[in-house]
Amino acid sequence: MTQSLQGIGMTSQRTRDRMVNRLIEQGIRNKKVLDVMRNTPRHIFVDEALASRAYEDTALPIGHNQTISQPYIVARMTELLLKAGHLSKVLEIGTGCGYQTAILAQLADHVYSVERILPLQRKAKGYLWDMKIKNVSFIHNDGGWGWPEYAPFDGILVSAAPPEIPETLLQQMAMGGVMVIPIGEGGRQTLQRVIRSEKGYEAEELESVSFVPFLSGRE
Ligand code: SAH
Image (cartoon, rainbow, N blue to C red; front, side, top):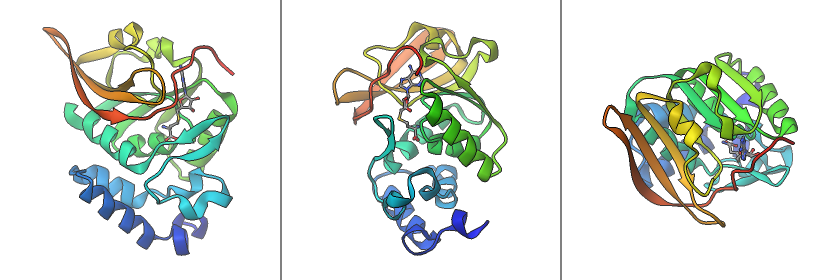
C-alpha cells in the first residue's frame, strides 16, 4: 500500500486496530468483517481536514448533506447481511463515499451499488479505483428501482431510510436472500433484517439507528 492508503499518526494501522477493538466491545463477532475493517483505510473516504477523525465511532460529513456511516453501523449491517452465508451478488443502495461499498466488495463476489447524487458516486468510484477494487458496478439512479437487470441478489444493503420497505427491493431478493435496511421517518429509525424464503418474507426488527432519508429522483 502507498503511504496515503496506509496512513500515519491518527490514520495509521494502530488507530485502525483500536477501532476494531471497540467494534468487538460493541458486540461485533464476525471475524471476516472485523478483518476487512481492520485492513480498509477509512481515512481516504473523507476530506483531508477530517482524516484524523476517520476512526472515531461517528458519522462524518461527506458533502451534499450526506454522511459516511459510523464504523459500528457498517460492521453491524455487514455482519447481519452475511447471515445468508457466502454472498455472491450484493445490491447496495446509497453508495455515498463508497466506504461501505469497499467493505462489501471484499466479502462478496460482486457489488452493484446505486447512488442518486452524481458527484458522490464519482468520488466513490475514484476511491475504489485507488484501492484497486474492481468487483463493483455503479449506477447513478434512484435506488427505489433497485437494479432489475442484475436481480435477483442474495444480499441487499440499504444505507438510507425509507418510511417502509420498497416493494421493488423485496422483488429483487433471491430465495434465501437477506436485506438489511433502516425503516422509519425523522432522524430515528429501526434497523430491520428481511429474509426471503419459499414461505414468503420474514422481517426482524433489530435496533434503533439514525440514517439520512431515502429520497426519490436523481441529483
Ligand atoms: N454507505 C455510505 C453511506 C452514505 S449516506 C457510506 O459508507 O458512506 C446514504 C447515501 O444514500 C447518500 O449518499 C444518499 O445520497 C443516498 N441515497 C438516499 N436515497 C437514495 C436513493 N433513493 N437511491 C440511491 N441513493 C440514495
